[in-house]
Length: 248
Length: 369
Image (cartoon, rainbow over all chains, first blue to last red; front, side):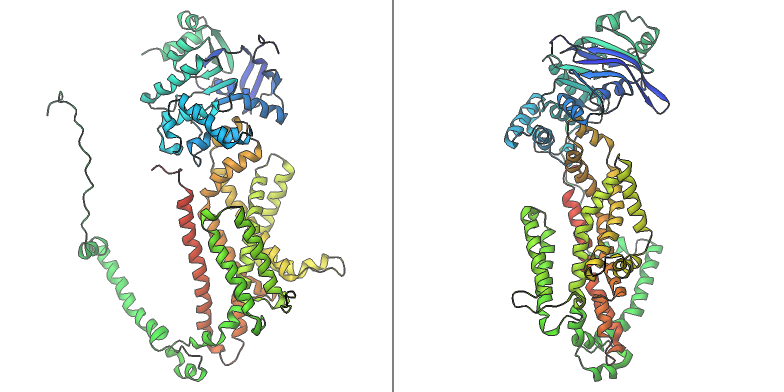
């Protein structure tokens, strides 16, 4: 593998939900270490797009390659890809019956076949990274939303993924908790991991992203550097969208 | 206080003390308004009417000695508990040879002790499974005999409480894993497996347990190759297992469906395989959601084992009929029925309480605080 080859490559990817054409001729290539923010109105296919990357959604046409492996029905390939791709969900999706520490060690122990002690050490390192090592023995529902989301980030990091996907990570949070999650994401962004982030946090897009991708009706309508994207949007749909979310 | 006042934290105070004592409690709960008072008076009136005669019959005038003449003398004025004193061994152990009845007693006690121990969560380990293997082996050696100098007792003579305990314990222990497999199968992506599981559940649920038992004991042997027989006890046991597994499978499926999709997605996104996801994420959560419904089915199955009398196996209720076959005591069937009902009630009530307890203990973490 050349280091310069894209780590994610969509070529003319299409997907339908029944009759609804959710992704239309998606072409997108992501370089190693690139940080991309995807935005757009709801129902535009942002989440579907990033959920295709770890095969939580199956694309029906086109080619999607992640780290040189093409995603097909091959279960082994899918499990390999999933080990390299961490994902953070809008609703956190922590396992409520396990403690924070057990949430973090589950995958390393069962997927990575790591001894318990080593998995716990690594979990604690990740908890330090997201600044809540003191919550290790609590259950997820005993934490605040912001803390839960940080645990979810730490959980995804425990398998040392090459790619991190964020699916509206701050949308379910109270305003005063958004910052603590964004802070953790900023730090990650500065550590060279490839990131794809569906979010409406335009401040984050401006300062952390290399590229902003705007989607509407299942298509990529416009993509550019944050400066250009926010300063000189070209497409009418983009202008309209930005005028709505940046109005205040 | 003006709006510009400095914010000060009000120290937390204990909640107001509730008015305690008997009288305030009575007033609040029994006589709070005229409707409540009327209800209380009606209930007290009913109790005053029916309780004294019941007590007269069950306690005051009752005959506790196994004295047939005294029982007949008292007539309907008092209960004849003597029938139980006289016949308890037949009721509890059925047609098992009288001199050997210590064997079912020991076997059942062993199994009961282990059942109770199995309810306690810290004991859930590999050792418990080993203990079950040992106890089940001991149970069958004691009941069946034929080795270690114990005389052989054919399964047709097993009966009473040991039979009830055996059929329900083994039935539920085997039905539970089967039901989980069937419930998972019904949600499988593979159409073959899915259809098979749906067919199984719908077929079994579509017929009464009595039919299943009949088929197990009378119809099944017709399809066996000549000369090959399977013990009727085993066939009935399999029938009970298959029957309760179909019901349990639907309960478990309810739990599976209640689990948010995001839980499975999170597990998948971490690279967990289907079986790892099922075992570590799906089942622990789904099963604890349906503990009350599972226990409901367990209690139902426990009582349904009484239907085996239909194929001439004498469980607790069947053994009672045997005991009442004695013309001297036949008159006192009511007392016998009450006794058997009491035994069932104790078992079922214990299961019900346990369900409540285990539900609370399994839910650590899924509640706040």
